[in-house]
Length: 111
Image 1 (cartoon, rainbow, N blue to C red):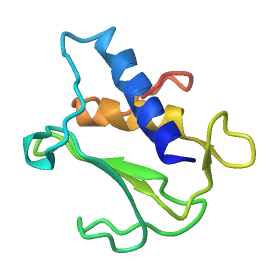
Image 2: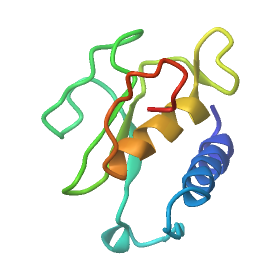
Image 3: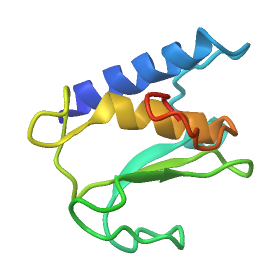
């Protein structure tokens, strides 16, 4: 996953949620003014919830305090999910957690 693909797919996931909620998302250059911060980390990456390596926990998000999203850098990320994990789908799901949504019992649901 390139940096450009990461940025484009995060924007697409944010825009998808914006179609369903009354929120406007905007990328900012100053991290201190951001409401949701996303990044890749591996193992113990400083949040108190370490990642477990490949094919385990893919990502996690925090609500209501920060809304931050951490993606496991040890996973094989791609677009489409062939031979790895589809970044857009996971980002869309984790953003739902950032917005306060919990897991759904409906298998086909985003959450």
